[in-house]
Image (tube, rainbow, N blue to C red; front, side):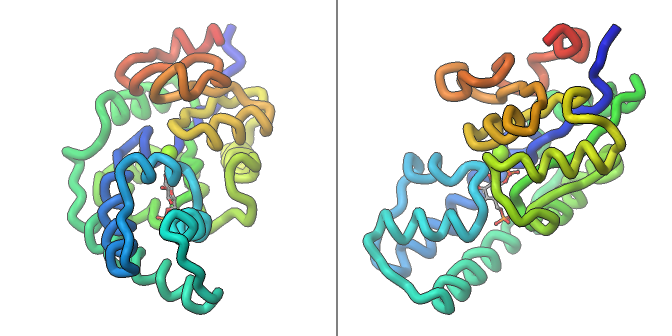
Length: 216
Ligand code: B16
Ligand code: MG
């Protein structure tokens, strides 16, 4: 008998790949500031908040900015990013994500989003998946970033289950740690060498079933 009553999904890297849009916008900002920003550098931003992402980028470029300037730079990047995600379509849903959400709901398992992004509603509306989530918790609702478990604990609370009854799906190391810190099981989406702390690691939601998760 399964103890799993809710699945909590990260957004970027699990449901869709918005990292490519974040990368384009951050690269444009870095170039305007006079330095380059590589795809390898972009890996350091996965699952990281917008404010922290900017700090990492400024450190890469060896650039110092006042808090007011940082706020303006983050807002400028976000404008470019929002412009790009406003063109997203359901074709960008990662393989297996929609089917997995539908199966959860058909089996009576609650679904929640647990994302660092403050743009998650725009993305879910554009890809047409908002209706498949019982609760949406994102960067607008939390004060502590992953690896703090706040975003996932609020997701569990919103769907009325305990942390031990949840499985989190995450592509970022900080997100996997956040799930563990919250007392939840976690399925890593990505490479086993990177997400070694997860209970199991698969390449995508098309590569795992609810039956396998219930055995974790
Ligand atoms: P925004 P996730 C994260 O999404 C991204 O992985 C990360 O690169 C981004 O900086 C963060 O959201 C904040 O996004 O600027 O839209 O608020 O993986 O937690 O779903
Ligand atoms: Mg992610």
